[in-house]
Length: 130
Image (cartoon, rainbow, N blue to C red; front, top):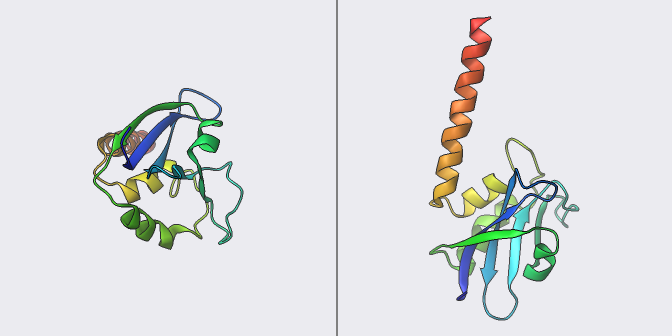
């Protein structure tokens, strides 16, 4: 795999029914992953984002595939900086929302937004039906 910025897709830590996403920065020297997880220890800013080596990341998550982006390392870091103190939230700040913030053109995130919208619409219609 050539150097660059990738969205890395893995299976969830506890089940293969859930996917986990991170941002892989592959520069040929120190390949590392930025990701957000409820299992991460708080970083020095109190948030849940973690930077770890690709090797450490893959010891916990089984990689499915990587999607190349057109981003630079500097763009990733500048988009990540304002998020460093945010804490993990299943709804508002999870691995998907972090990766989608960094790489918004990544196609599967657009599909997930559709399914979240469909689920929310179904729930609302169900509640109003009662």
